[in-house]
Length: 369
Image 1 (tube, rainbow, N blue to C red):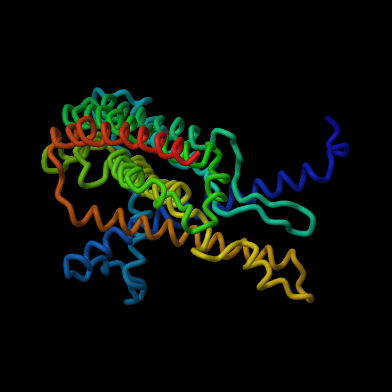
Image 2: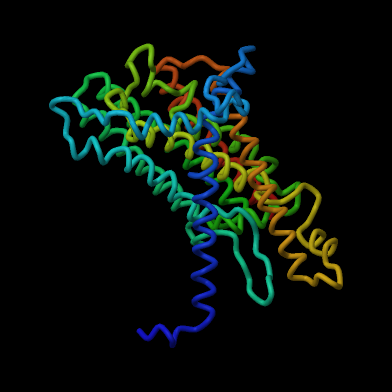
């Protein structure tokens, strides 16, 4: 192919796509993943009436404990990469990558804004606008299970193996419920395209939380269980299994498991925001209202669209931060469930409720039509 024969639109599309990829990597891996290690410590300290992370400093300046982020990174880079005797070295090394990569890949189809007309070019704030975007999220996210299972098996440690077995059974159990809870959302909005679901919620009263309140509660619960956070942290269960599937991990490999867990928190917040909380929309404020407000004669409509885009991106990530706060609050509030309680909740309570939700949603839609 002659590079000079490629149209200008191709290079513009390529440049915009690379910018969106870079932005999402910077936000998720560069900002949220490290900052949440500090948030977890600081929020727990506030809730427990402690000072929290405040030891790391530069010339006596602690920056509210933010230097612990750099200290943690430095420690993981310099720590020994230990592989126990009898472990499968290849799989032991590969499993953290299998756990981390799907958490990042899911953001390829997560829209963080709408569509905007900038100087004759339409910008859609999603990296890949797939027709089956929601299905892609579930398909890719489920691959992380293999990373955790392989980690426990390849470590040649009984506690690790028990943790990986718990991970597999728990994630399989709650993926069924999580998949069924979004069926109601698909029935209401009639699409699996995440940007269309977000765009359909421009009207405040069409937010998914109003149309599918039970689905929202079940989806959030199942998502936290999928991420193995308290009160569903039995696969790790320090008081029972030392550290579960990553007992035999140290250094950067441990850091990758750690990072995957925090990125999955951001993923949960983003998906819940798109499906149930209006995506990037502001309550009672339509996109055209923002554009009209900033469409001054000396700026033009393109600048107005650019301002609307910036506002929407800020609103979207503000909602994501709110749901991260909710997950952190649950983590430091509730005790760990027993394993039989987790299985009972998934199979005997949430699964029947999700089926009932689908049936009731179908009846209501048919009645309204």
